[in-house]
Image (tube, rainbow, N blue to C red; front, top):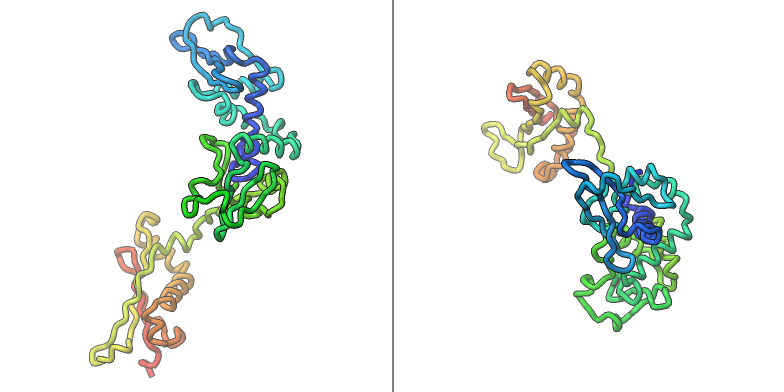
Length: 324
């Protein structure tokens, strides 16, 4: 399973890694070999504890690990555990390994966690990282925070947090944690209202998602028309009025790499000729200088279109009234 950390629930599932790590420690993982691989000698991953509820994965080398039984947790499927620990990184915290390698293997477990339990885990995580009595956001000079009673509150005059322009550097943020997406958190915070409990705000956070802009695949005409040069306004000899023009010359660029011959390009241009002309006229209509002339596009007609050997097309538009 691929966890999408761009959602509140995705963050919460990553936070679950902290709870699972504590369960692994309580289950007896400290000082146990959890994975073995053979190179010139045997290497084993060993979990070592260094303070309360903290542990990291280290590597031990030697033939003694050849027969050493590997430790398996009592509450995780043995196959999924074996798959996960084979991807663990030595000399990294156990909770980071759990987050990166074990959590993606525990889809069934994650889906079975009730929302109330996710809220509780997220609450414990936020409190542990100092969310209470810490500025959460500031708008129009008003600072918002969670009180010690776990209620979203307003410090209207910013008397509690007199950071002025520097408050953005003091807003709540879990430090040194990869499992918490601050962009999702900030979007959720914009929906918090004064008087909400911390649990109510966490529920909003869990339902928050970031909008992903899916890149649209370019169409055939998008791939064909690579560029449209700015229009060039020209006058015939004898027309000295700089406020007018007689012709508009404009060039369309096509891709050389897309066609193995000039003839192949010619066939493609014929196929999409109406679409090309439409894009060119739109480009002219948007041009700032053309707008200054105050002439509708309906007063122009295409008088010439030449496909050049340099894989471009030159189009000339002429004022209709010149032919009267």
